Length: 316
Length: 276
Image (cartoon, rainbow over all chains, first blue to last red; front, side, top):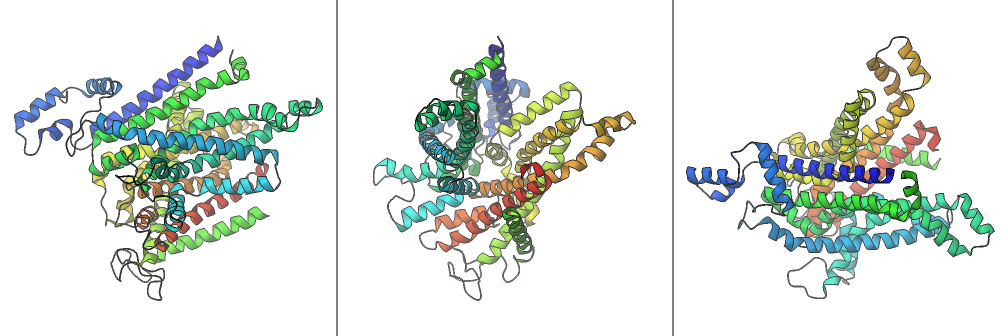
């Protein structure tokens, strides 16, 4: 079975990527100034206390052992305690912030997929005519204009000038939560939306020129049924792969958007950690974001053969 | 034809931008000094007005251009050298090195660059100081972006080499006793300069964008050193009082990205007749 082999290879590459990112994260922590013992010993520590803590946290062992402990702890979601402030466990901070990031990322990818597929289909069907021209121009702008230029623009128009929506997140919300999330989600979705639109258009145009589309026309399949059932169903596969990769843009984007709207999410927490030099929190942020990115792409690659018999056949 | 006009426009803009970056910062006022009253509109004395701390917006924009261009060009030169070298080794080295290199490149290429940036900058930020001139102020950003920029060139080099390495002129050269090094440097690479130049313009846009993104979220080039990214961030915070502060860095950044993409597209169609 070649398919099993392909799946196993893909899984192996996924595991390899996870090991790669965990090692880089570990190495960065090793090279960073300060360590866990110094952070926990407090100010002006006695030498014996530091020695004891160093022994407790295996800092006196070779690095390869420490990498082992690091992996074991990371699998148990134990990222240690924060170096700064109240030395709160990093996991608590992550639990507080991840839901917000997950929420905006989920709605953004949903919005981007729906709008991207719709606009891309419209542009592809009327290729070379006015609707196509408009969609193509707008999506080119969407790909080239950076989101931190768009964010202030959106805020200025909808929050400052028109006063429809709140400008930034507040500790005590003055209205329903979704009002506060509309602008962030839209800002986050714009770039993947533009990319998915362009890809759907290109893929659909490609599919519509195939022989079986002429066949469908010849046997009298109605227009929209032809486009949706015969065209889009084939054209959608590269788009699904792209939804997985555009998750990477969401990661980058959520840092920008969370900062711009002061949302209490993982991105904001990560930026705070960087500014405070809080190594364990930085490591946890990178591991979580990178790990999610790798897993999402792995799942997309594994699901694709289920959706498309041709990929299954080609690999068998 | 339209493409040629865009190429000309883009190139013209870039020439102006380079001049702006070279001479703009100290043309009339120093970019770091608080000279006038804060948040004033444009006037004969301060052409684009002053920012929230009373510094001249024009000279800060120009300094931001200097930062962006310096970071962009340095990163791209490093990325070109590393990327092409790895690409050549990934094509001609023994099989086990080749496979290892290309797998590593694929892994790096897929990795979201901002994450690596966060990790490296977050951990090594104690080395960042402001006030040391453009080179020292941007050093961490340059390193981070260079680490993430080279895989694009490796992939391009590998695909280009794959089509070139078995062509007749290469075989002929090999038959006449030329070494692989000679063939690569004298016969193959000279054919790639055009496409590499075109791609590097688009990549340069990406690098400038990444630098601005890092600066916007507060971990790239740090205030008081002006960069378009941290200017946008600062202006965003005083948006209610003075929205025009937001306008200029956004405009500069967007125009630069557009211009580089136009130049890249134009060059590509000039060097690669098939894409016309």
